[in-house]
Length: 228
Ligand code: SF4
Image 1 (cartoon, rainbow, N blue to C red):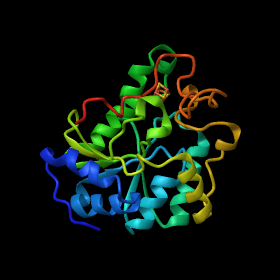
Image 2 (cartoon, protein in one colour):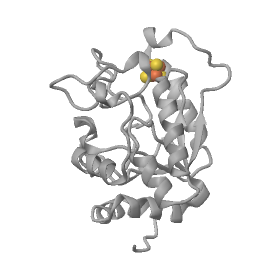
Image 3 (tube, rainbow, N blue to C red):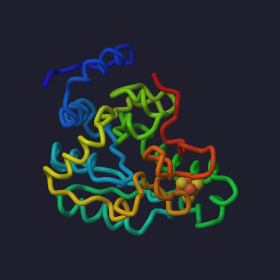
Image 4 (cartoon, rainbow, N blue to C red):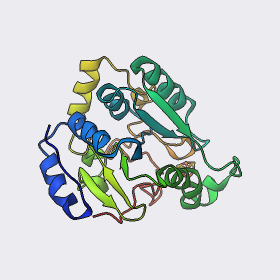
C-alpha cells in the first residue's frame, strides 16, 4: 500500500488514486493517517463496513447512532457482529434532553437533525476524519460519491471506502466471510434506518426507496452536500 500524504488541496487527486485500491487498503490508510482522530460510523443495515473495519484494523471502533427509533433487530445485529468479529462497538445517542416524541410525524428534518445529525457532529467535534459506508449504487443521489472528500460543514476528511462497490461485490463479501444479513433484509428492507421512516424498498425503486417512502425526503442530513 502506498503512503499518500493528505492535504485539503490534494483530496481530488487522492480520490482518483483510490479508485484502484481495495476498500480494506483505504480503511487501513485512513486509520494509519488519522489514528484516534478518525470516526467510523455504520447504520448496521448490513455488516460490510463494520466487518471490514474490525477485520482490517484490530481493536478499532465502529460507531452506531441510536436515534431511540432504531429497529430492535439493528441493535441486536450490531452487538452480535461486534462479538463475532471481536470489534469495538460504540453506541451513541441524542442529548439526554431529547426524549421519545412524535416529531417524526410532524417534521422529519427536525427529528433527524436532533436524533442523527447532532450526535454525529458531537462525535466528530475535534476529529479530523470520518469513514462512512456510502455507496454509489445506493441511489441516484449517491451516484457520484467520491472515495475521499472534504466535508466543509464539519471540517473533516470524509472517506467512503465502499463507494465503488456494487451489490454483487457486497453479496460476494458476505458469502466469502459467512456473514448473515440484517434480519429485515430478507423481508425487503434493502436500506434500514429508523422504524417509523423505513419501509421495504419499492419493487421498481432503488435500494433506498423505502426510506421516508411517499415523501420527497431522501437523506437524513448526515451526508451534507457541502463537500469538495
Ligand atoms: S429517520 Fe425518522 S425517526 Fe429517525 S431521526 Fe429521522 S425523522 Fe426521526
